[in-house]
Image 1 (tube, rainbow, N blue to C red):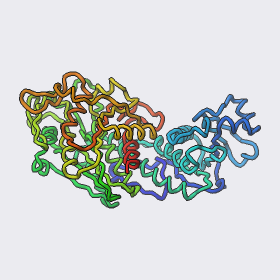
Image 2 (spheres, rainbow, N blue to C red; image 1 turned 60 degrees about the horizontal axis):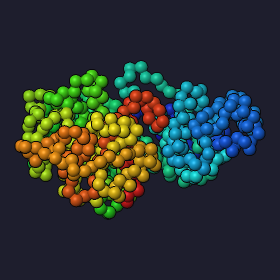
Image 3 (cartoon, helix red, strand yellow; image 1 turned 90 degrees about the horizontal axis):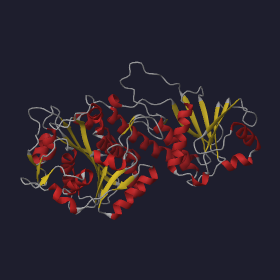
Image 4 (cartoon, rainbow, N blue to C red; image 1 turned 30 degrees about the horizontal axis):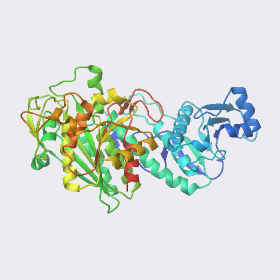
Length: 501
């Protein structure tokens, strides 16, 4: 990954991402040793510069967003460089933070196989609406995210050449300050991706917990509830899900008290592997992807890493409900009745509807113990959500209009978009059980009844549920994502927490 050199990663050595080939620095003048220039231009800049206009017309380059044209052995005033890469911005005055990050991603990919070693970025010809410092920082953020690699298990790792990327800035101090903040966010996304990309033999409840302990060094309070603590608290739902595994469940809580305001809570589903239990997943491609069933918890830990690393002035609690859903002589069975922490009994209709069970206890615990002013959970919860909106949006379920507005706006800003789906008490009859207070599945509306089930474990606190099934993995490198775990939710939740204080 691309890193700002002054900032060190907090990832434990056993799961740390490999640092990428680029060191990012800001400069107030063109670097003397730069061999490559990335020159950002919009259509107007091409039209007003005869030299660039002539080259662009010859190569049919129109400065569309993220399109590039490489000019080898350039003439004056660019003769000091071996190459100039013209990168289109579209209309600069319409550039958003997300579009700036996409430019960085496109630049990183265009340079991947280049011989360039010292690259100078020059955005002085454009005047982005978001301001130069924010633009440069977001550009670097895109460079960082699109350069992520997970090669821990490769025996023949390719060593990338060391490179420098210089950002030409008229306000070096402001740019550097924003870079530090966004570098923390890049680290949070990378941490989430690492956790998702790890096989189940590498990440299970105990090893997931280990990834959070480093946050204590920066002032976060990290609490781990093991099976004895869960039993004492009466959290029978998470215990039931984890009972079939030799690796017992954990409830992990990270509290960053960067302000004295009433806290907000983010809660993540952390099924480190999901066999489906005795309702076994029978499709090979489906069960193969179940190492990502803890993507919600990964997003929460990535968010907490970001906020703690930023020393953000927020009061936030991250809760991760961790368990393996396995088959054994101890595993819970269809037809079992379990008692959740809030005292409600649940009839197990389907052991593959386990995520809502671990979340039920986590939601109840954080509300009763911390009294947050809002709770948002995030989970790879239902296939029906994918049927509804694919991986284009996360499903948003909430009856609190303020939360709906906040999360929708946060998602649009960072392009981790959400789409509101129904959450209605009219569906409660679907969760009615003859033997217990609730069934753990509905009869028809899978995504909505799953959300409604979770809603039964939150009392008066404003609550929203984010279903990120389909968003957790990418089958190719595109945009800010690389193939594999996406870390979806880290940027969305971070933006939401920062803007709700």
